[in-house]
Image (cartoon, rainbow, N blue to C red; front, side):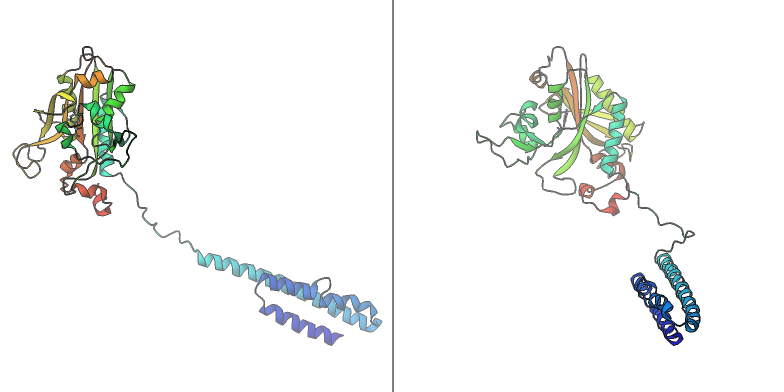
Length: 346
Ligand code: DAH
C-alpha cells in the first residue's frame, strides 16, 4: 500500500507541475481528490485493511492528501499571479510619461467669418435665419423682378434641377443667391423686420481661382416705417468698421439689381495700403464688398406690404471674399478642398 501511495504521489505531483490552465488543474483535482478520485478511493478502502497496515497507510494517505491539497492551492495561486503579471505587462502604464498632445479641431474660416458677421448684426438688432438651397423659379427670380426673358437672368449661371412639372416646365433650381430669402421671410413676417440670412448658393461656373460652383452669401433685410438710405449706409458702414477696422472709409456707388431701387455697390478703402494702391485692391485703393439698395416697391407689394407705408433696405455679399481679403488668400478653391495645411492656418 505504501508503495502505491508513493507512486501516486510522484505521478500526481509530476502532472500538476506541467499544468498551466484552469481546466487542466480542475481535471487533476477531480482525478485525485474528487469524490471518485484516485486518492479518495484509497482513503475509502482503508477500513478493509488489517489493523497494523491500516494505521501506517492511513497516516501516509492523509499526509499525501494534505500535500496534494497544498500543492493544488500553490499552483492556483501561482497561476493567478502569472495572469496578473501578464495583464500588467500588456498594458503597463507609466504615469510619469508626458501625455500625447490632443488634436483639437477648429472652426472653418467660413464659419468663423459667418459667426463674426452674425454677431455684429445681432448687436444691431438683426436676427439670423436660414432657408432652402433648392429654390423655385418664383422665389429665385420672378418675385425679385426678374421675369422669364429678363436680361438680368444672365447675371447668374443657374444650375437647374432635372425635374419637369405637369406644365412641361422646369421650375426647380439651386438658388443662385440668398435674395429669395427676402421674399420667404416677408411672406411670413410683418415689419418691423431686421434679419440676416446666410447660406450656400450655387452657380454653373467655370471654376478658377475666383469662381466656385458653391459658395456662401449673406443677405440682409430691414423693413419698417421710415427706413431710408441713411439707415442702409449707417448699418453697413458700422459693419465694415467692426470687421475691417475703425478707421475704414466706405464708398457707395450706383449699381443695378432688379429687386432694389436705387441700387448701390459698397466698397471699403483698402485696409492694406489705406487707399494708396496695392495688390489686394488691384491698385484701385478701394475694394468692393457688397451690393445693396432700397427694396423695390413691386417686391414689397408682392408680399402684401404697402410701399406707401413701409420702406426697407437690402444687401447681399459673398462671404469667402471677406477672409480672402483679410488674410490675402488668392484662391477661393482652397476653402472647400479640405486641405488641412490650408485650414489649420485659421
Ligand atoms: N443677390 C445679389 C447677387 O447675388 C446681391 C445683392 C445685391 C443682394 C443687392 C441684395 C441687394 O440684397 O440689395 O449678386
